[in-house]
Image (cartoon, rainbow, N blue to C red):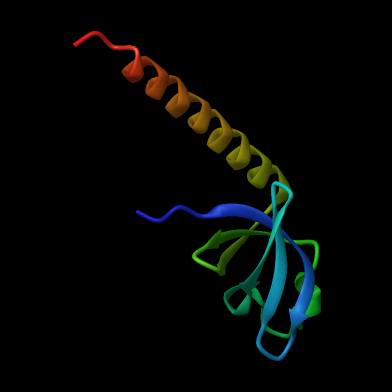
Length: 93
């Protein structure tokens, strides 16, 4: 199973290599956007779009609503995992 993290493409860093900067919850990373550039589009046409990012590649485009829902679910999952870890740490053997 792969996990794609939603991010918003904010800039093109190298159009020839199809590299862009993506913002994921305020963290910016360079990713490859070759898989999400549509026919007849340039790299610049992707700026402002939401994508699912996996191991440095934008795998697919998503709409902003789907991105926000996914980010919220990931946040809640992180909170649940932290709570479970706290419970395990305090468990009586």
